[in-house]
Image: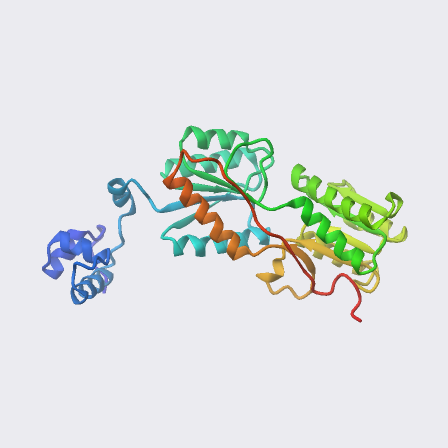
Length: 336
């Protein structure tokens, strides 16, 4: 039963209730083994009944650590962000940290505000999925002397700690998968204008086509087109398109929906491959071939790297590249 008084329950309150000293109560609540198990259980149960919540700020003043990490990313309407945040939260908790989620919606100004909030709350470190203009955010984090790690999107020309993947290889793997399934008239479609990721995946797409001897006349590319997706894809299909590499899984599923509305059946008439491997974490009803990586392993590596930055802030800015793999679920070609 919780206390009826309005003030926050303190260690002194618990000491008064249990008859132990404040020091004993403090050590028991931190599960220190120099306090007997019976005493720890009693004090912890009493504290729980009284509604005690540890004062993190007071603890951080004593230790110099808040055990919190800021995660700055885009809007959560993108399911990939939700998967990433979930796995990072699991890995952080396993390592004694709490994640505070800060949504910047791919807006550089909002991203900068989120970084200032993380610094203001004296978080131990920041995990950043950068927007299209993160230079000011990087500068502010450096000025604030807060350890940080850039995730997912490589910062070209920046000597910063990063955990990414090879986007060019990802584009190559997607196109090569369709080619191996007999597709010879391929398209690369992206609604996204993230310059580096989009460009690198397109380069990988063309590399696979070059190696397979597919002429430019049999390739189609659309990046951030002002035209509706339906108009672009309908035109491509009328020109013989039989394989589509989408920038990400969300766009791939949207393309499949558009194609069906136009009477084009996937995969019998047109094969589709995405990027992100969202079906590893979400039970989407439509099977989709996709390039992706081991998200739990990625999250564990991210927490390992940010912890290293926290404990060795002057160390070299390491750049790690996670391994990609192709997950075939049959959207590439008709079942045989």
